[in-house]
Image (cartoon, rainbow, N blue to C red):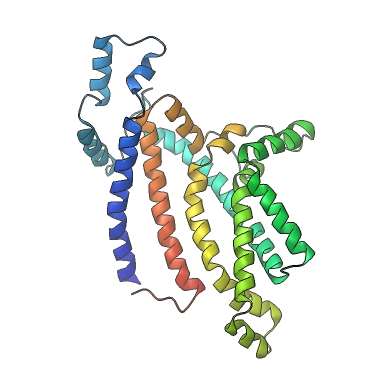
Length: 307
């Protein structure tokens, strides 16, 4: 197991470098950040040249990238065009988005797997058909529509929640935004669990466990569910990074100043340092989440061994 982890960590290095290089190149060709700094009026050549020197934009792109990567390994993600350190923006944005992601993942796992197990064990019955139709509706409706409807009904019309979240964004305030963020993923988790449960239910090891007279609950939890969760865990592992990076719409609707909000502001204002810095952290989140998912396979299925 230790050798496998070391090998995976070494494989993550070129993936991290390649992903950050691609992001850096894409962000640096999306527009002229100096023009964005000057607003509607065009900068005079002297001012533009001074700003480029100040932010290192007068150097070749490859040199800018090497400088950026060298600073990253020292914990310096650069300075935004407003003079604020990117790490300061991260220190306020990431805790909020992490709490939002935790709420979304908990809802996704608890509700999605529970519905998937129930429908998988009762495949073809009315409850199965009803849940399948409900998940199809959730997948078909865009996230911004779901968010606006819940905000209008629960916040404005019925007054059950605050229409917008405070700056601190406590866990209780993030339940509805977390539900909106997790809605589509919850539907996919439900369908994945249902399909996996229905397929594995006919497997020989399940029939053997039933023939031995084991209690139904133990057969479902100990034998059927553990093996059925492998594709679900794969999806959830990749979904963690997607939820953190894809929270732009949800955070805009509920006025949450998290990672999505900062990414949106950075893209609109062509603030390359902010965008590259935040996406660099999201790449690390994806890589670590995928490593943890691979290690979790061996916990769910004892037949899987890593050398």
